[in-house]
Image (cartoon, rainbow, N blue to C red):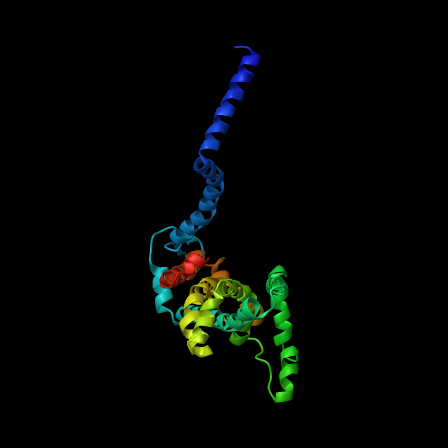
Length: 297
């Protein structure tokens, strides 16, 4: 076969393949997504599988070497050791507190940006809400460290009232995490309120409903899935955070700190601790599944 014939045959194959992909958009989409999905499965799901397996290993108490022998000792220690139980409960409590605070603060902000502000100002307000996300995580946390430090801005503002700032500790951790993840709660609520039909609110007012009744009967049921969607981010990000508590938490310990401290000395225990947020988040997703929040993500 000559060179020209080989070239023509190759071009014909390419044209047939291009025609097949053009006629079958689903096949084209599948081929485009196969590589990144396989990469995601290998990196994410593969790492979770390794984490799950290593949690059942043990560590030699003398050499600190990992012993690849199947055992449930790590999980038994998590359940029976008071320190681990306290840290796990504290971490879940911090995540829930951050989620509740974000929801309480985000709702009036989102209501103003979506229903009260002038239409021409709304895009600018959304950009202003997103602006903190563009800043470095560490810069924001260290800024809060300066605010909450002794003699800092918090003490200066509260001094005229005879009060002082919370200092470093659990309260500082909750405040910092609330600031960090607040935009993730505002945006879905803003979108839900923006899509809320105005005629429903007008009809409720015409029928004599007070603002509180309108909020409970109309606004809250329609916005609740978006609140739950935002809580997925605030809860999961707070539960897995370990940097903020190291900077502003003082002596407070969360799950992330225990994982970080055990990663070198006791890798199987660190893996067992790392599975706790995964299990808690899965249970949390199952709990809010019926609210329709997952459809709002």
